[in-house]
Image 1 (cartoon, rainbow, N blue to C red):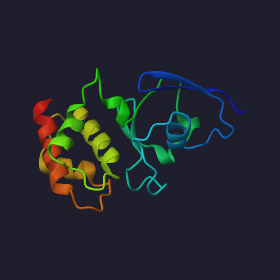
Image 2 (cartoon, rainbow, N blue to C red):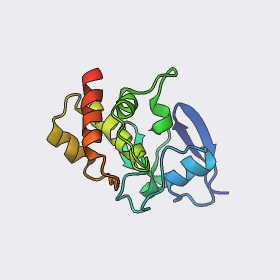
Image 3 (tube, helix red, strand yellow):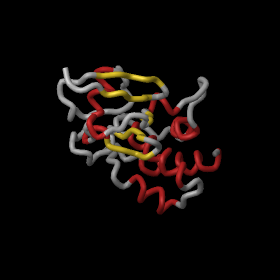
Length: 156
C-alpha cells in the first residue's frame, strides 16, 4: 500500500492508500467511490466527459493524478451538485431544455457550465460557447446546451 491520501468528495471524507499515487482521480471516483457522473472518454483530458470540480474549478479528472491533490481540497462530482434532494439549477436547466441526446458528454457540459456560472453569473452566448469549447458532443445538442446554460443563469 502507498502513502495515505485523504479526500473530501461531495462532502464525504475518504481515506485511501493507493498502490499507485499517480492513479487518475477519475479511477478513484468511479472504482473506489462508485460515482458514475464523471465518465471515461478520451483519457487525455481533451473531451471533458470526466470533468469534476476541485475547489470550485473545473478539472479533467482523467489526467489529474491523485498525488496532485492536497488534503482539504473539495472535490465535487455531478452527483454532488444536487443539494437537499433538489437538482442544481444547471442540472434542472439541462433537463428542462432536453439538452442531452446520448448523454455521454452531459457530465462535462454540466460541470463546466456550473463552474462558468459560479464565476460569471450572466455570461453571453459567446462566453458560454467559449467556456464549453473544450467539451466534445458528437450528438449535436449544442444549441440546447447553450439554452440550458442561459436558463440556469436566469434562475440563479
